[in-house]
Amino acid sequence: MTTNQMTDQPALSVQNLWKVFGPKAEKLIGTPDLDMSRKELQAKSGHVIGVKDVSFDVAPGEVFVVMGLSGSGKSTLVRLITRLIEPTAGKVLLSGEDITALADEQLREIRRKRVSMVFQHFGLLPHRRVLDNVAFGLEIRGEDKATRRKRAQEMVDLVGLSGNELSYPDQLSGGMQQRVGLARALAADPEILMFDEPFSALDPLIRRDMQNEVIRLHHEVGKTMVFITHDLQEALKLGDRILIMRDGEVVQIGSPDQVVGAPADDYVKDFVSEVPRSHVLTLKWVMRPPASDTEGVGSPTLRDTAIVREAARAVLAHQGPCRVVDADDNFVGVVDDDDILRVVVAEEA
Image (tube, rainbow, N blue to C red; front, side, top):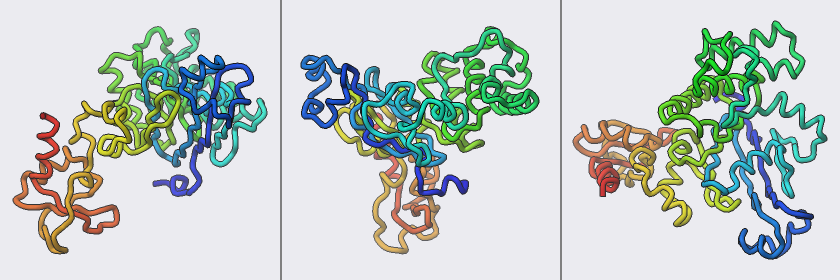
């Protein structure tokens, strides 16, 4: 973990954020009308709630995934965070700075230097080669040609496009074009990377490759990432934590194992019902308290954060309980083959 990651200050803090579409929407904030359902409010006043009193923090270096079905408000939320649309009420703090209070020129500086976005539609300039597309943001920022070319080449190499520097976008596959978009976003060295369903239009195999690419890049560059998706499997694969939205509201925020292991309500429970639990749950969900401090002494020792599927081989190969420890190496539980098989059998039931 970097020094920046150890700070207590969130990289991003969203506080009581609202977006109500309609005339004089700000006058509705704090009134009983906003307790109505979306449908009731629209019928009464013609207003539509896009985002309803959303609050969350994103830690430095975290991959924070916002997910929900179409119309849940997730894409509206990411546009509010970057002020591509204006909030009706609430605050968005970027490293403690309230960007909802910034003037237009200050906001442009934020977008040029501190926040980069990757969209579903790549937005590449068709008349520019790959290297020039990647360097475009730096050009807008006023960097000299040698500096931006050097940085662009580094990013092209980082995302695995070496040898394609002189190609035009229409000469590349969809996955390669999205890599160009990713390199362009990284070139600005932003504090936060925002992804708005970037892989939705890609074929499944290419999509999987791009998800793996995001994981690899996150390990290499450690950027804070906010990732918008409607795909639960994508959310579980990428997210350190996941925010699930419905009708503009937060339903649950938690780590992948929390969302699968302890769904907040029937909506989330139904959402995760098809997820193989052994692929997501950690040992802390299946271990049991030790009978004594000496139980399992001499057996394999496993972390409580180990995924059940990944720990299964060691547990099943051992005769008797395995010891489970937390991040500080405290003995917190034991797990045996029955505990593992209980999860696996439940998946097949």
